[in-house]
Amino acid sequence: VYGFSPGAPEDISFRVFENSVSVLGGMATRRQVRVTVRNAGRSHGFDLLIYLPNAAPRPVPVFLGLNFYGNHTVAPDPSIRITDSWMRENASFAIVDHQSTEASRGVNAHCWPVTRIVERGYGLATIYYGDIDPDFDDGFENGVHPLYDEGQRTDAHWGAIGAWAWGLSRAVDYFETDDDIDAGRVAVMGHSRLGKTALWAGAQDERFALTISSGSGCGGAKIFRRNYGETIEHLNRAFPHWFCRNFTTYTNNEDALPIDQHELIALVAPRPVYVTSAVEDRWADPRGEFLAAKRAEPVYRLLGVGGCDADEFPKPLKPVRSRIGYHIRHGSHDVLPYDWERWMDAADQHVR
Image (cartoon, rainbow, N blue to C red):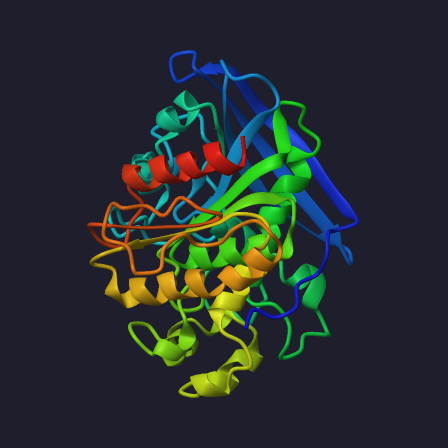
């Protein structure tokens, strides 16, 4: 589905280019780090934005996630660096030039309740996903791919989701060098296509202590074979760069797949996983997401850590608080404060 990704790079470096110890009214430290990877005579870098709670004992647990529109959109903070990478157009604010990019600072802050996360004793780290690999079909010639693919790309090589997941692991490489961050207590989260990415990252990298998928749908948490909402045909037609080319074999051919997505969730075991849906997000197939979580349960129970403590599809706002966690809330395809509160509850339960 996602293709083979390279392992950890032999040549990776980190440069802390900003460390403000009193932001958010003195509640937090803001850190910006440039991560640079080198291979085969090429280099590629991306920026990691970090907020750490000043009142929490060190080292602190951290939520890590990719963002859609640039680190500067996470908070209305004029000190956050604006990327010079490919920029995705924001549905709320058309980013067409540098001036409009400046005006877009903080436009997605509702998805990233930094103050509340810090209040609950967690750090937050995020990377703009376009810094790792641009989100369009470019023949894998941009972003991190050229560092590893030149002259040897096959139909089984990683797509963009593989690249984004690989980038999340490079953030943990940095955490392992930072005495303020507990690299053993990192929760990886993502929404929509980045929810697919979070699941793939959590499945591959056992350093993630908790894996969170929000509205990840087809190619993420939902069962392929339900053929409800988004399908493999749509994914491969609209987003062929997300997956390896072998995945096109299963366009309108779901029953031929040798796997399904409950097995992706099971690959995270025995570490906890949390799946989130929304009532109006039928394109992501909430029931199919729950079924995948439930069908991963035998592996978790085999490993002696419990499973998904719900036999029926839960009602909205009735979270399932087990090793395989789940909730569905009212509303549409988005990340809301309710989601974050439940994710932090899960982190309190499993990570702290």
